[in-house]
Length: 411
Image (cartoon, rainbow, N blue to C red; front, top):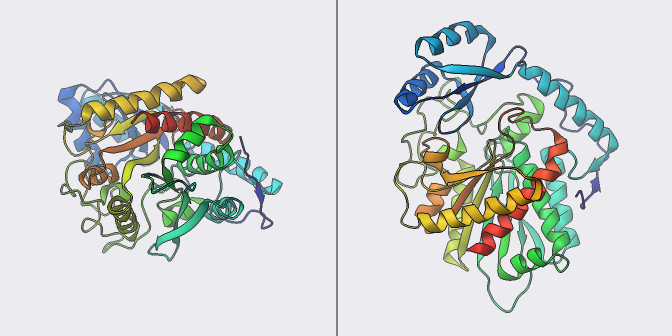
């Protein structure tokens, strides 16, 4: 509800007058009614043209389309029997609208849950939470290629003994701004709700909660200054294209497989080796330590968009031996989430719910011994995509945290 409010006196910090990368004329198309026999064909088109996939489901995929390839791509899709419709007619117009809203919010100087915030504001938000609650700490678990800290807020209410832990990270993909905003909402919600809200109190009496709002700070910062649609981190590769998809860089024994790319220019480039990236290394090392000590019981990673609650596996169509348990906890979360604002979520394995993906953090978490690993894809279902309006931050936070708590407490 915007409970935690701090103030910044550096107006428009991190908000450039205009992004370096302009998306005028770019569109987002939904290729729909994809039949099973057409799946490999659409993957081939995407890989050949290095199309930027925004989201997908069991029979559809959203792709960002450059103006210069619209005509040829339309003909290619028609030739292969694909149907499509335009979801976003001019991407830059949505970016411009978001930019104007950001300027107005920056001028108000308040940092709360009614607006998106740059990295400096997020870190100030986290610092404030730690300084005003004796049982909240803030820790850097590593640094990035560009020297930025990877910060985590630890919510650990004193108890009679060691408690198991829950890990929640956000912002692994830079352009998914609703993800860090939802983690910030959660920090606020849990810190103000303890001893006041029965569900929050029960959660924090049972678990220590680790929240990492920005898994990819270099990429996230870049979306505020240069390219709003940037996805990967910002590491320099051997060629001309920068960045690794951190959610293809975790090595669970299936790194480099289906749903990832060895092309440095691809949005799903998996990196030169598993755990080649400082960000994935830091999360691996820190969560491995949690597993070894009090025990990491549950691992969530928050993404957008498409409104899906998922679990292992991503690299194979096979189900885990614990699939019934994972499905039950996901269902409990979805039911509680939907009860708040009526938002509908699907659930299932990554492979079946959206697309095959190797090298994901939750597949690694599962392989490391954390059975309950989940990925949430937040609002919406395509009308706004990664440019979800700021007035949806609070309802997204409300429903997501209702779902998370219900899911956790059902396990």
